[in-house]
Image (cartoon, rainbow, N blue to C red):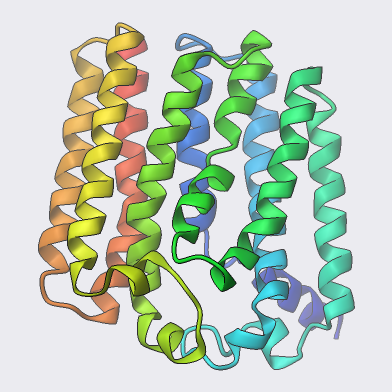
Length: 284
């Protein structure tokens, strides 16, 4: 019985689906390496990476709490632990609170500015799931929440957040607009039926055009970051790799299907990895 409960909690935290953690991790690593000029402090890296996995889990729990009335009506989410009643609302809130406390403990190992920014990040993570009821643009808010490790990484190293940090956050917002719209397109028919809003439902037949605009904007902002930080050609080689990933996703989704949209969403981890690879090589 204990292992069954723990398994349900693990699925509620999406420990069986690491893609969300990777989409949080890559922009955090971008920021850590740039803030540390290729040599970030090891303990800061350890704290930030641990925080990524803890707060992603917390975000999943509060997301399912907010969506518990919708998930049972969506094919992809109907088996989630809160939707089926396998985990109670009280258990979910206790789990969210516990994970948030762990995250708070981690950020106490950093400086004061990082702590202040971490509180803002908690508010972003807790409020994001409710935006799908009031706006068709929750993907951009997700980009802020998923990218909030960027200003924290700069604050932890420099005790300030320079222009480069905010530009990286802007790039992440545009990138989330692309990958989370692919994700939302998987559920678009169900979302339209039950009234959940997203960039996928808002863009309609122009979905791939909107995603392409987000992908292009991401790459442009990242190139600006490279210019401001005087990163060499290896960085732009990473950007080229990311651009090829984006082009492949556009091509593969020319034939619309839930499977292709979801594969494109999963494949965005390669986009983030390409950018990080370019940053790492530029500092070697």
